[in-house]
Length: 268
Image (cartoon, rainbow, N blue to C red; front, side, top):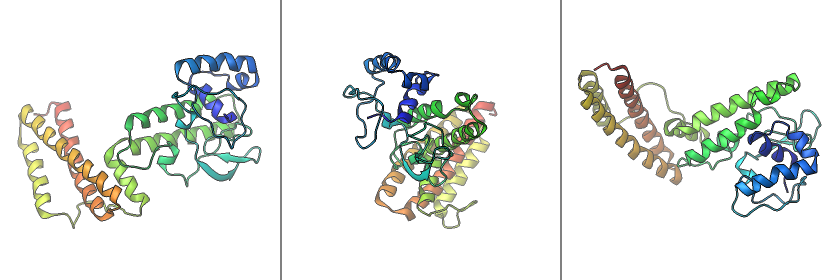
């Protein structure tokens, strides 16, 4: 069954500003949900252990409300005192403050894996932002407005971190207690460091757009290979190798940004 806060998520995320009114009016609710089911925006399965407000069965294969973050956290709603979930209280539908113990993968309700689907990640991010965005709480209490802003900011940070391979790898290693030191890695292979230095020198000395583009293509291929190896190392739990690969990714990502700047500025 659909809980109140999940139903509110669905309505708000698809542009229904008066979610509470729709939920309280059974006829209006049917009018709203029927097109959702027909277009594939309705849920396909509900958690049986939660009391809901709708008994309508979902169309098989359609988008589920589990695409929203539904992580259970051990805390009480600040307003009604009931058990609260990550974003809204299922009892009174009031937005909750961010939970600083929840990791970014759980916040965006995605599998904790390096090779995550970034398109699905973006879709979940947009859906959640629509639900907690401060514009939806302009007429609410100051506390609700504050929590909305904090939740929205946290979603932005989580999405930025998980969106790109480098920051995602850094974060995944941090979750496992592995930190990457700032500055030059003293343990890096001298041969690798020499390769990086030569690439940087070639980029700095060339005045040819074709040569800059060629360097960019070469670096992207290296990053692609490093990304695949990083995924394999994390899956195996080989954190030492993952840390070494992360250091290499940082060097090549830095060169990639320099290539982009050279092309954008026309500094050839």
